[in-house]
Image (cartoon, rainbow, N blue to C red; front, side):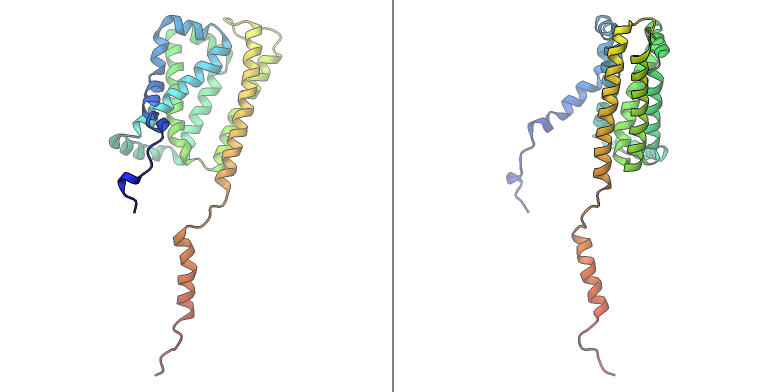
Length: 231
């Protein structure tokens, strides 16, 4: 056993992880500043390709911070009953992405404060749920969920690219084409990362020390004593 003084020091980035998660968790509060919010939502590309992922990342960071507290961890273990193998988190995230990729939903978020608040809350909650359930995703769910979401993103991106005119009232056709290109690229990146992760999960793991000792112990039991007793 190593002496405590001989343990490796924690990497600087790992020590700064709680501070980074805390900063990202409160990121949605920055959107309360009207100037910043207008700058992000004035362009369709920034609205969809920057603000949406930032809100989801804020929810994921908040979930990581909550996992450091024992009381919140116990609550999370009870809530896992409603998220069997991560299906609920994956389904909710796919539904949120589907709704807010609709042009009418984007227009409604710009015209109504209530709809905009629902947009922010739904993306934040999607990030929270995915951060908690992604650890329980098997390769099948990972490929299905990421493939479904990537297919929807690519389809929306191609529709934005092929549309002869602007689909959103508040955004122009040029910005719409930039957004469509970004969605297609994100869909390809998501598919590649999901496939890589699924292949790693599907790889057979080497047996541990206990599993390696089991056959030897079994062989000893089968062989029996070298000199059986005679009656």
